[in-house]
Length: 447
Image (cartoon, rainbow, N blue to C red):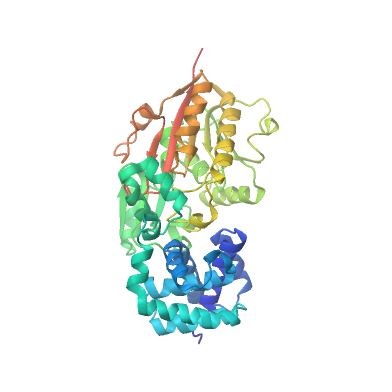
């Protein structure tokens, strides 16, 4: 039987890949799981929990470690940073007995080639046990420390969200629920809920997303027969608003311009079987393969293309009645699902992301037929990637009209109505248990 060292080492290895190489946590964990076949299923799950927790609360723990280390945080190698974060996370947030957390973390340091630092790791963790109260009090002296976020992001949120900032930061640290979308072609949300409740799952329905069923205790969705049989998909309630806002009807042509992994493509097809055409485009061939997989599981069909939405050759002379632009963004609305965003994103990323988002809208809006609608969506909660992009586009495009407010009237019970004087709508984290999203509905004037 393992003493727990391998799972600690696997977690620290994945965290180090995020800190030192800019990998996403999921990719780092998957790479580690392929290379660590000796880890059993429970050990893999433990490693994932430790890695996610270390990154979720890592900025707070980094403030603690800066008090414990003789040299600045940045001068230590990523492997050592990761080992220390995993060790402190166990002491502060997990149910691991303290002596086991310390001993196995020290052994994990040796397993990762940081044997010379084993004494330092041991000393830091044991001093934390002795001085915990004072160390945390100093770390919690700022919002960034208290809620474990990068300072640059907290500063932007204070400027843009004011009193709502603390609620957003707290929501970002919550463990995300598993929300399913009932496949409208095969089952109603109520019937899906009945089946899941009969199997012992506690759940709730979402008033503003009629296909959504949220499980109170997340699980690996592959364990659900309803998922394997194509009765449902995984999709947060906020993301499920794209289809009603797009207002799709039978007999029209639709473009999903940044489609992978295909959640919104599949939702469109489930809701409106009689579409004349649906083109799902993505620039990444590997991610586009995920669209094929999801369509096959759900028994749906669409035209899938690999290409850049900014490349005119991707469409030729095609025009569409509806265009969905679920644009690449900072992901600051989904930090609770991807805590590595706290470490991977920089304020310097925002201008290039906003430029790409603006370029996508500018390139795709002319492909709308007169009277058609373009829905712009991001899972960012920063104005630079939301209303800022749309305001500039509207000021430069006389034939574009913001119809978000009227479109949102179809969403009964929407927790965040449009902001007066600001285009689009925001769904901020923590308002109704949802991910953070921004939507803007733009229509092309009929001349």
